[in-house]
Length: 340
Image (cartoon, rainbow, N blue to C red; front, side, top):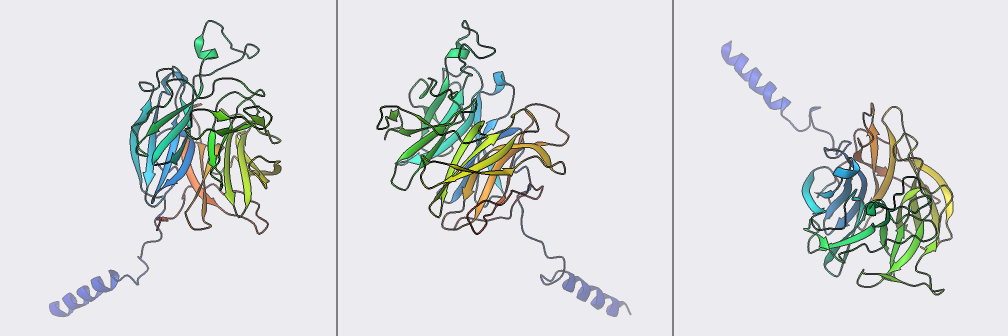
């Protein structure tokens, strides 16, 4: 009797460990948020066989003086790279470094960012005795590796002047198919486009002699981002107020990076079942595929502070006419998807 019971128990144990049983695990998921901590304005990009995200360290302005980065082989497991750049390297940054944007060129890695809070005299809060108000803007740092350490390329802002009413913040660099590096930026509901010089130390003038042209689409507030898919250029941006639940993402389409842009509509916004304040996004494409992801920040429910923002990722899909389907925010995130 004891022998029969032992055999039965052994048989049951073997059957329960079989990969064909219902205990088989499902797909590995990233979860949302994808890493711990308060992080916002995430820029996603692929370097080699790794996904990278460069976010803002979301804190009070006086504490927001460094950048961390995150890398992943599969979109699920993320490695944190601490303090890839801080204000010890950017000596002119005295308040609020934010909205980083990374790109590789000729074996070097460049990190563009906004710093300080440059204002014009007509803006509320302008103080002529406070140089944070009238010195700052967009800087650029360079490194040999995606994880840095980065060092200041110029020792001063790349762009500190105001053009066409745009505050010099929230920059994005887009490399077109002909090798031109277009520079999109702008706060205060104005979006400008320029062309970087080959060494990223300045801007090439347009044919009319201007350094920047305004391309502000309807509804634009801040946070421009561009990508190219099947011959169509997509310009994305954030609308509403970044400190509240009205924040959301809209986009337009064009045949050229310089426009004109045809606004399509909103594709990411608050969901009372998931999160609020979803915005300041970027997009990641898995190389060699038509698989796309939206990377963005959002505010957990309940939200307990202005700077309590987390970085998330969800699948981005397209309709047959090339328009983008509304993004469904999830707690699950996305499945593992290593780069071949």
